[in-house]
Image (cartoon, rainbow, N blue to C red; front, side, top):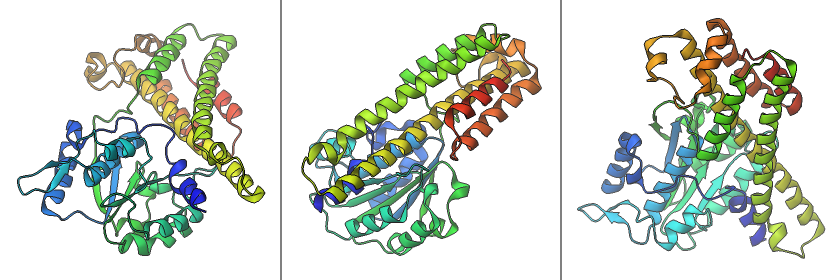
Length: 367
């Protein structure tokens, strides 16, 4: 039973080490929000429930992880009054939180094929949070993409969110504030973490986006050229899915417990499949968001205003193919490209056939 609970609450919480998770001091662009947290820590007035909002789920996760490390660090940085206001980012506790293996820090995320947070996940979480911390001072729960809480799951969580057990902190994350239920909003202290406005892109994603843009900058008059672009996108998505499957399968209790009851094994298999699909869809959405930001650059370049020419508002000024594409389209066509990507994201949020949605959208782009 213990293995089953660990599986629900911890095992599928992350696909890899928390990307970018550092100490609070390592987020200069989020200075205002970080300072508010550190003042609360110094005064011993930390809220029991936070809602972190921003444009990047990954950055919000990293900030939540940094706060969790500060609360449970074995060698924290302290204020003049002795209160812990940041982590050492090096002790055993900090390293466990980085790798999502700390028994008192729990990550909940959408784990169904439709990327929702179901009521069963919340019920398991409520049971878990009622237990005393295993090895740390605080229990920390991070609900990633809290806007994906189904209504019944959110309602089941309200009492715990309003009156959590002592020494427990609940952190909800969202990039879509409008979808958060009012009953959730009213029970959380909201902190907004801004940034420069563009979607963050890591090195592998940047390399792929540059390659895609270079391919798009070539002559796109023929249907074959357009299907080459589609193939470029599909290969990247296949790579993402394989990465997700590899990491989640390695973390699955199916790999750790050889002999289990048939019903439990079948449930673990189902949950593995659902978790893979949910994490893949999240990563797919991130990739398409990066592509949409590049198409925004094309639009700015086509407008030819000062911001577009000097690169001040461009997300990826280093991509050479942007200007070539901009020279071939009208401002209206460039704007329509953004609408096509928005529609694609909406389609992929349903049960639409992925390959068909991608094909239709790629063929509609003006390049």
